Length: 341
Ligand code: F6P
Image (cartoon, rainbow, N blue to C red; front, top):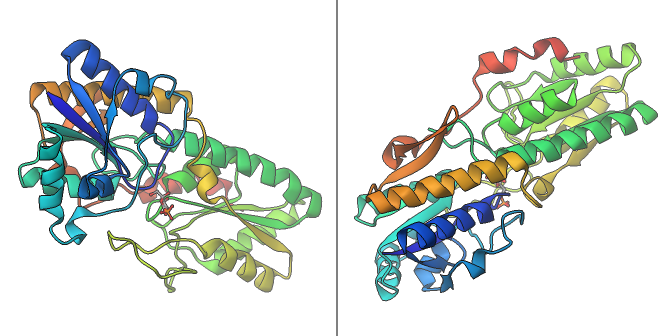
């Protein structure tokens, strides 16, 4: 059996750990052969395929990013896209694919699976928003990076008695903002799932100043003001139709400053959250996902995604998990209200 591997969408720490475990188990236990498709679905469209063996995955477990490259290419947005993917697989005698990606990449995988391409999905993303899995790998590392940033912002905010706003990624889900905000002891946490009232935010800021502490605000890039619309600095869209988020952090600091008459600044964490070496948990989860994905290939159980259910890795039909995202339950968010202000 010859298996192709691809990594699609925004990169995240742990992608290489999946590639390594799929290849190691596939070769050592099942005598599979492997190739990598370069840059996600783009490599499948452009016939860019590289051999993968045990020596090519040696030493990559702690390395961030992806040795295969990634892109936000959507095969369904390209002329003859499906046929070109099929041609590439046929040209290299690839029998099945392991597709490592987030919502968009897995959505395309579900579509291709429905058209007869044998594949197994593996959920990744720092956003933790893939439906049908308790966690995606990449998230834990990003939470660690963002939490450390909140810790650092507290000390400088207090030295200058100013508000520091930190904008984190997460697209339309607030997992990263909530986890890092809670772990870092932020005084305000704003998530897309709960539109915020700017007057209430300013009230929390003022009450923090009154007890002689400087406020730290963690805002998800997808957070929206009540009665307002999403604040964006750029309205270009990718091949999956997604706008590039970011801008709410700048807006918030300006509004806090204007309304409270105090100094407020913004830190946009950006791609720092996606880079660097994966946490131990992400290496563990990514490794287990890889081992179970290659088992699914061996079993001929295609059109599924491996997922974390409690502590168990299970398989769920791709068709059931794509087309929707996993967001923060507002009641979970409300648990932390006592820390605001
Ligand atoms: O989906 C992962 C993610 O990091 C989002 O949190 C963010 O909105 C987006 O990717 C940024 O993508 P890009 O690097 O393509 O601008």
